[in-house]
Image (tube, rainbow, N blue to C red; front, side):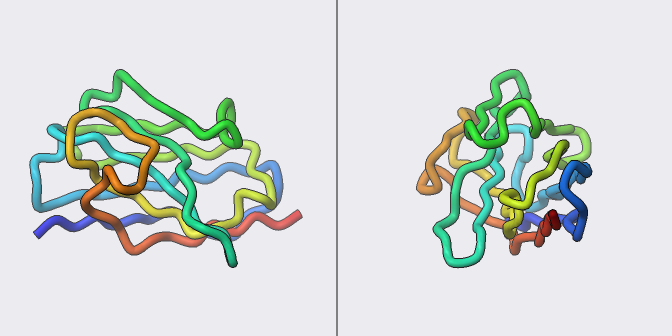
Length: 124
């Protein structure tokens, strides 16, 4: 079965950086778009970033544009989210997701598989 495992979360201070990883197994990783979403306490899960099968097309939420970078290494079946200049409002559980096609999407409904999430906490 398809498994997505996130890692790299933690507690950092405002202005610090973190890199999240998402290791995928159980399907041909390079065939599918991938995405990152996050859910803050008491809020709905929101789109963060997505990337197409090759890494050539990337989308970002306005709130993270210029600070976060999504990437993937198909040979390692792994996707990354480099997060720089972190802010307290970035505090959330971050989820990686694998899509149903090669094209990236901002919509949760376009993703078939989800990881268990990794906590990112940014203190002020």
